[in-house]
Image 1 (cartoon, rainbow, N blue to C red):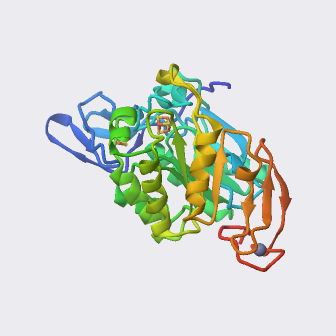
Image 2 (cartoon, protein in one colour; image 1 turned 135 degrees about the vertical axis):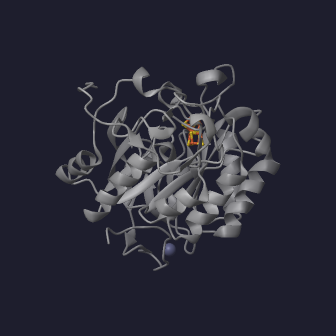
Image 3 (cartoon, rainbow, N blue to C red; image 1 turned 180 degrees about the vertical axis):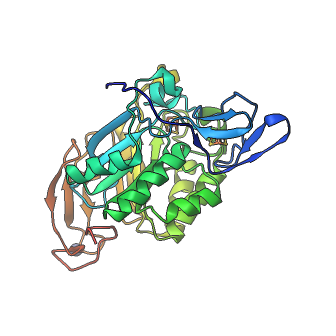
Length: 344
Ligand code: SF4
Ligand code: SF4
Ligand SMILES: [Zn+2]
């Protein structure tokens, strides 16, 4: 990736308050970091400069690429379409198992980046005829101002906005985001102890985000990455399943297998059987449950909840290999399948 000459100015943050002695308090996520002058917040992309808070990663993505929307994973959101996927460095979590730790736990100057203002991101999508932008890879809510500026422009071009997020954001910015958001995949990582000990964070605000997105009518899917010995006990998995099914049986749930990464190199990969077992458990309560990071044709397939036939088949590379939907309905029995299946 080419690092171009950076002519961009510092971009002031939207959600913070000024305190005494040139300190500020960020109000974007529930960490509520109090930041000294010249210091950064926990997410490494928000810096206090002379009593003002700036998003230093604004317009400086470290990752820009095109992925199938299925890779997010979003399985019920315009299947088979590509998503222009974009991330800056930084995250408000510090998960010991992070697959993308080299960018999520870095500062802007530590990773090559592009200078890419919002209009250039959207122009790129228009030029390539890409209908979805996905804010992903690291934690998109921490580059909130950049994301929202891209999202506003994307809307004007009838491009859909999607996030893949840990869901750890305060209600006010979340509500603003909801005005421009079309789809989301939110992680539910485990119980409160898991959030505290493995992610350096908390569970409750994540559950609140999920409720808000669902209430706002944003298309929502949920991912639970299962790590052996950490969050694989059945009681906790059932809690997650019940939380989602209480909102709606139509919210797709993805169980994903862990592979050793970052500070969890010594932990074994998740056995495929654990993931499949979790899916079987969840299928008793939810209409659409998937497996990820394992070879599992059944776990990659959308089945009609009424006639039980396969309506969307996907291969291990996230490509849609069969689509039996007509106007969002099962071709075999006419049952409406939950999701966003048209560009309207
Ligand atoms: S967004 Fe970053 S700076 Fe703001 S409260 Fe969260 S971790 Fe702290
Ligand atoms: S929330 Fe996601 S990006 Fe952030 S540290 Fe955890 S796994 Fe990595
Ligand atoms: Zn059917």
